[in-house]
Image (tube, rainbow, N blue to C red):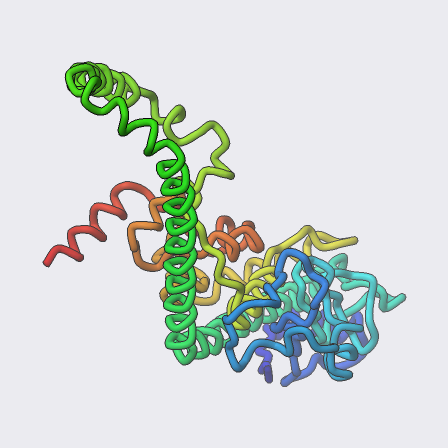
Length: 357
């Protein structure tokens, strides 16, 4: 981004006295972040290989990384490890997964940003805030791009869901067929013996059936009077009711969104934590009335409008819910940066009211 400076005269005089040159009237601020996932070995973002979910834009699944990707990976910042560049790379980190190149006023050693001199501190802090604004705009732009791709591939995701339901139906029919075959074989082996005693046991059978119905009804009522944990199971992580099955592999858009959101999960900048604080201040000043965007199962929305999975309520078709696997890969972003609330019963009630015919 091109930045025009407007420095107060008194501050400008002090900068000239310290640096022996006039401060720039225009300057360039550049940021670099890798907004696409290229790591095929990242277990947290693994895509299932043997699947019918074949989106055309999945990033070369099962193939070797391209040379361009390898070169990019060699200098791409990991979360919290972005560096400050003042001509050359310094030892100062940004606290984000974003590199920043800007004509900041360095110390004599050019290894750190000068926050000691009051005039240089004012200039550097303002420029860092501008860089934070640029980071927020870059996040908005990339999430908007991901949202457009998400909408374009909606039909392909729908086709995968249809294929999965068809496979589940066939598997269920197969299981029922196997069970029925086993039951018929057992009935045939005992049929001859039962026939000889049919006439003698009619009365006893009727009495036994009546007794069974009485006992069975009572037993059913007792079994139903249980606490919710007893019905659902103690282990929430393995209870399908609390954690509805979601075996669709991550799409390319979701992988890119995860990498992008991880880049903006802030860490304390080192060795000077003021750098990260000024960047975060600029980030929050940009679009202050709008929370950062997130990718939900219905597309990209503002964080306050999205909902995080909670105890299986998402299975009822509540809109704008973040997939569990996406949330698990970028928890800090959803909770701290975007401020996404958890799904609750009020959201479910509102959703059901809107779905009434």
